[in-house]
Length: 166
Image (cartoon, rainbow, N blue to C red):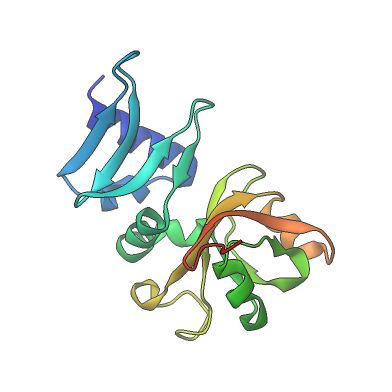
């Protein structure tokens, strides 16, 4: 199968139909020398997504920002924390349920999500181009449970824009 087609189908399956339409034609792929499988792909020379061995996709902050700016459907894979939690999440700390202001309906347990700053525009999802991704991570709960629960981790953050300095 063509690597470009494989990545497009993979992105659509995990993030929703139509999200792959935002991917540009000039994606650069890195292949494993041992197995020949796709390891990751870059957009404009910057790492966007790593393909995990379990079939998932590990987004980078740049990859999430690109999809958010170029695809309206990707909005449903995002979580918006309350403003007080943004500095902690951007350092790479986990996002707790009580700090979730809004979350998209496409979030499932174990899916990769983008944590976005809700202070930039109205907070209703009307203008994705002005949004800023502050972290990426893995959802510990589905979107329905994130809204319902007041205790526990909602998103285990993998990478924040400030990084951890420990």
